[in-house]
Each structure stands twice: as C-alpha cells, then as structure tokens.
Length: 292
Image (cartoon, rainbow, N blue to C red):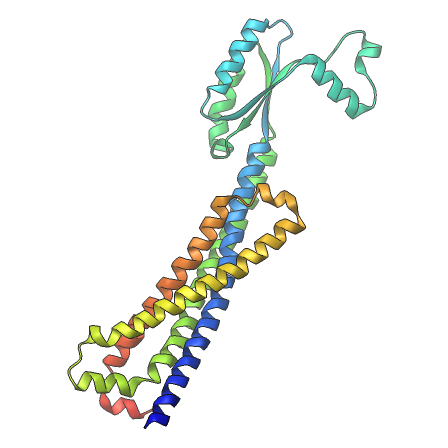
C-alpha cells in the first residue's frame, strides 16, 4: 500500500513538472510575441515623433513676433518639441551638406529662419495633419509649411499591417497555449480520476475536491510565469547588451507590459484549465472511468 502511494506521489510529481515545463515554454513564446508587439508600437511612436513640421519664416519677421510665434507653437497640444533654426544655423547645416558655402557666390545668406515642430505620436496621422497644417499656414510671418506626409502615410500603413499580423499571431498563440496547457493538466487530473470519484462517493463537495487541484494549478502557473519571465528578461538584457541603443526604446513600460501578460496568462490559463478539467472529471459517469 505504501509502495503504491509512493508511486502515485511520484507520478503526480512528474505530471506537475511536465505541466510546468510545457507551460513555461508556451509562456516564453507568448511573452516574446507580446514583447515585440509592444516594442513595435513604441518604436513606431518614436519614429512618428522624429518627423518634423517645418515652418519657413519670412525674413521680415521681427524678434518679438518670432518669440510670440514660438510660445504659441509650444502651447499647442500636438507639439512635443519646438526648435528654432536661425538663418546662420541653417546656412551652416546647408554648407556642411553641400560642402560649399552658398553665401560666398550669392553675397547674402539665402537660407530662411524656421521652426521645426516634433508632433506627438497621436497627432502624426493624416486626419490630425489636415487640421494642423492649414492653421499653421495662416500664421503671420510664416511663408510655407512642409511635412513629409507621403512618407508618414507609408509608415503608418506598414506599421498597421505589421501590428495586425503580430496581434493575430499573439491571439493564435494564446489559443494554442490554452489548448496545450489544458491537455497537459487534463492528463494530470485524469490520472487521479479514481481518487476524485472516491471522494465524490464519500460525500465530498465539488469545491472541496477542486481546491487542491486549483492550488496546484496556481503554483504551476506562478512558477512557470517566473521561469518564462526570467528567460524573456535574459533575452531582452542580451539584446540591450548587444545593441545599447535599444535601451531608449525598451522602456520600463515595455518590461511591465510584457511580464504582466506572462504572469496574467500563466496564472489564469492554468486555473481555468484546472477548473474545467476537474469539473469534467466530476461529471464523468462511473462506467466511463474504465474506458481509458
């Protein structure tokens, strides 16, 4: 009898370890996809905020009017950063780009002063620009307003496609994770179907029977989530060490969201699978216990 109980404990331990390993692998895959989805969104926002709206200023605009215009631009809800480019700075940048000084043969500085507005990511789209650009063009002292709208539309279109594909992959991976975790836990619970049936015969309530299985599932989900988060965290750290510039893109919110999804899915999926599997076993008729 003691030998049989030892075998049962050993089998239960093996089942728990197997469940933990399979759950960890699925969470690593799911966490990786979620990380790249969040990273892609963060990266796209960074790219959008690097695009600038350029306001070419009239040479006749006074310093007071230019200062007032700069204050108005900074107060706009769409503006993330406003930079003033003086005529001298514009000439220097143009001379470095052309490897020659245009003022040497023209006699005067032909470069106009300008403002560069970095828009917030939420406003860097076609609909928002349709309201922003006309209002800027009407400002006094502004000769022209330019913005790489076609390039931005192409960026938004490609980002939308990539994000949609990655979200679909994440959804499919979540479904696959649920199915595999459910099958693993089902095998673990089904191996103890006679014990469950015996407890039911002696009058144990369904809640009492479910409790140890749910506790075990919670432990498996928590341990698996910790292991998966460690693996994913190690991969992200290696990526940052390989490319230090990634540190500016992989911010704390990317870490929190990625690890949060891992822990949420790890715990919820194992609990839901255990709950459904135990209930299915409890509903099983006595004649069905010996069919497998």
